[in-house]
Image (cartoon, rainbow over all chains, first blue to last red; front, side, top):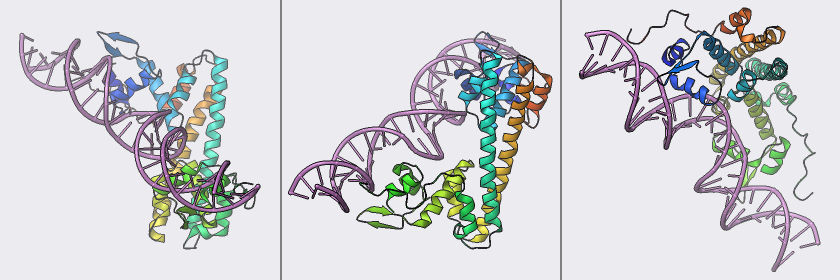
Length: 137
Length: 137
DNA sequence: CTGGAATCTCATGTCAACATGAAGTCAAGT
DNA sequence: ACTTGACTTCATGTTGACATGAGATTCCAG
């Protein structure tokens, strides 16, 4: 498979595949007179990369997992990312609930609604009023 | 409240608040001899901005919502973002399930596991093998 | 064997969301 | 008054993930 064919299969630009290669994410099977050739295993790789990206993982994080030297290390990294994804899902769900309330709230300025404020502030770790020291003390 | 106090409350750097101001997200109540002063309403604003960011919204998207001219427009934008968040949650959950399978899978190279590949490819919109035209065709 | 598409490398540009640094201004404690 | 620290503006640097363009090479249908 040429780089153009692999790219078209995923509707990507070829330079994206070259970029992933430059950061160590995707290495072609062989080179024939300088040109990259890919096999079916690369399809699985690209699929994984796209899935990971859509979950918000960085290319660096994906490279780490894919380049894990052994199963133990890989499982450790996977477990970390699993926890991170769960955290992100919870955060996004919280924001979603906030929007849901804003949609239900009849107040014209929903930021004034006490229930909304209570929801919004939960778990953000903002310092309560009065706990902030002024200048010089 | 000075910019330093508002920043410390959220454990932010002051230049972050100035940056948000420069992109039209957060305008101080007044200026006293050039210095920004904020009130409690700005706490609600910052809270909202942080929540939105943690849900993956861009500053531009947040500005749009917060600067909506009327309730109708705002509800429209909120509904869009709500759908976007749901989409993102689904995507992240899909990647999470993939990781869960990889953690359970006994194969040393989990990308070789057929069940894993099936999971990974679902909903990515990749073109099936054989559907890619070669050069000039 | 030639013309045009596809590929190659290498360099530079882009975009968002800040981060950093310089140089000056203002306010408050001593 | 003086110092110190928070504040000001303005300019430039950083990071991640590409995007764009130049200029050379290679493949293949006609």
